[in-house]
Length: 151
View (cartoon, rainbow, N blue to C red):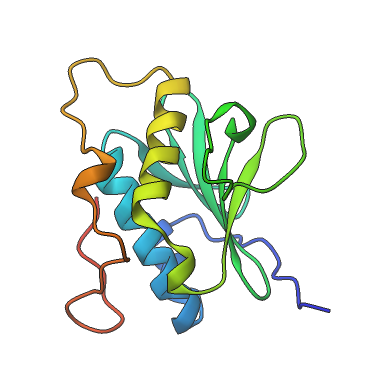
């Protein structure tokens, strides 16, 4: 049985991310980069012990579990998912299970982020980054264990 991680009481995203064990931290940093590239207008904050992104409403989140991460979409049940990478059977929430870097498929996840932003009302006049501009595999930080500076 996988060990379940308790929700963090940390309120600062950067401090929380630094507290995550190194292997999962790299996965969290890669997902944060994707959200920042695809939806830089979203506000990153801690909610319910998780890293969340908020626009007009709650858009997406990262939940660190015992043996994986859940990259969740608050309105995921309404997001087109032709590749079938979203899991869950609740009324609204759907997640991408991330156990390794190979599970972070930038083009597919970018399309899900775009769908979530559209459901949130989008951003009029924002020049978007299309899924085609993202690499097929997750980018690696230039320095191991470091992520590009995020706001």
